[in-house]
Image (cartoon, rainbow, N blue to C red; front, side, top):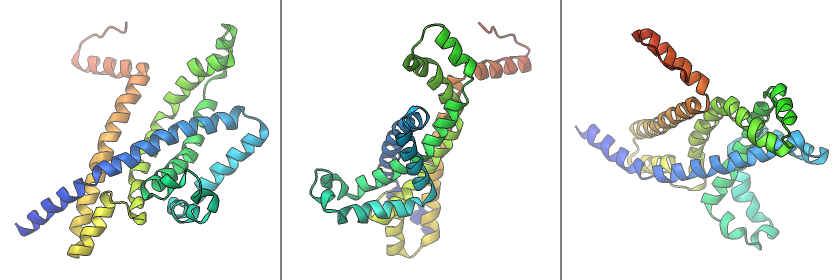
Length: 245
């Protein structure tokens, strides 16, 4: 019974860090997705110097560990006088915003390649048809290229979101008290590592399960032909006929 009480108390303590974990994940994934679209568009349609700059950025952030990037931002930027004497220092001296910046830049590098692949997978015939209808390049991208690319890239981007939720645990290294940070604190107080990490892992597992289900629902909503196919298959199993209109 004592062990069960300890697990219950540990779980309640760790749940206090869930809002901070979700904050890190939501802000970084949202900002990273916007930046990823801009980077992918620049690499595909921008001038050559901009394309080379984006390729270098993607290579650097995909080729180095997130932990190193977080340390460089948290400890390195404060060494630059230009940063310390600018308005950015009000944010970058805080561990929370340093973690957000590191997570955003990291996920944007991976997301840019996913979005670029999705754009390149759009059948060229659809683009030609849009141009034949008199659409401008911007309208073609907004109405044809981007929606089709979004459907193509959504499953892979769902994996990236899950990876970023798990990556928020690295923020504990720079003193942020999210789920993993609170877990480290509890371990230092109780010297009972296994139950604490089991509870922390269960929390991350539950969060990622919810995110996975939400991504599956979004994927079905954005792919009507798959939704209709599953409904038709289900109707066949029950002997019912479903209208496809």
